[in-house]
Amino acid sequence: MMLAATARIFVIVVMALATGGCSSINTSLASALSDYTPEWAGGLPPGAPPRPGTPGYDEYVKKLEGKSGQPAPQLAQPAQPSALY
Image (cartoon, rainbow, N blue to C red; front, side, top):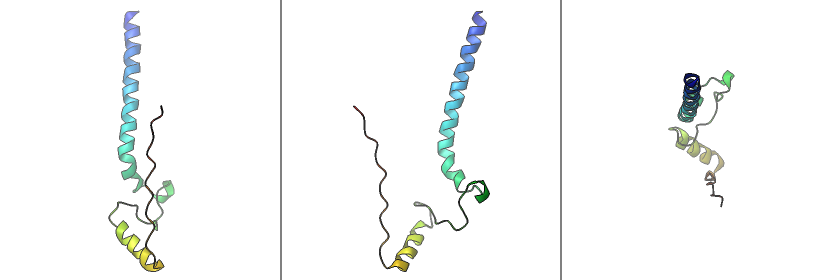
């Protein structure tokens, strides 16, 4: 009886650790894998503009500024979460 209870606890702990491991892997791989996902599977279409922070983004913004004659709008900073008291 004691062995069965210990085995259940062991299985629950292993499953909890495995689930937590998946979430930490997903956050680091999601940004890299999304750029290489084919369009038919929900990825970016072939003519999509580069993302901020990628190598071709600065050239893309300069190209847009040249077409419109006005400077490109600044990107808004994401809202910082506030603590609840």
